[in-house]
Length: 173
Image (cartoon, rainbow, N blue to C red; front, side, top):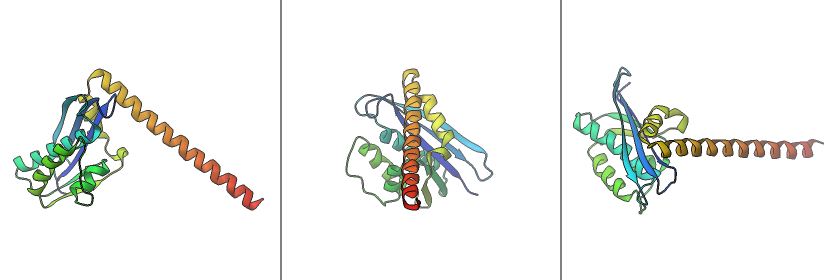
């Protein structure tokens, strides 16, 4: 099974510019949790969801390095972080760039670590830890924003299905 790790980050009630937090989980070969941590990065114009996501993966890298763990699989729902840390996308700048550089230096010390993207629904524990680090006003807004995004996506999917059925009805009528 091996060491498995999950990271997530959030920024609310605004992204960018809100409160930035992260959450991480690490489990050993048997599935036993050996780390559950979160952190508050701050609030303001230099904070964003990507800054928080990078802080999360850095926390995992630092844990692995400090515990002499050289092989692990890390899961995250941030395509940006996963693609950049697997060298499939380049980083050119942005609020997260300093965190990216820090993560890259740590990543270089862990050549046998695998990083994989997972859907948000498979990252609930790390997401909950990030939400717990969020100040009261930011947490409610962050949760509300995520729920609104989910509802909008559902409505768009329903609309596409309705349009598809209308086209099919026209074709077969």
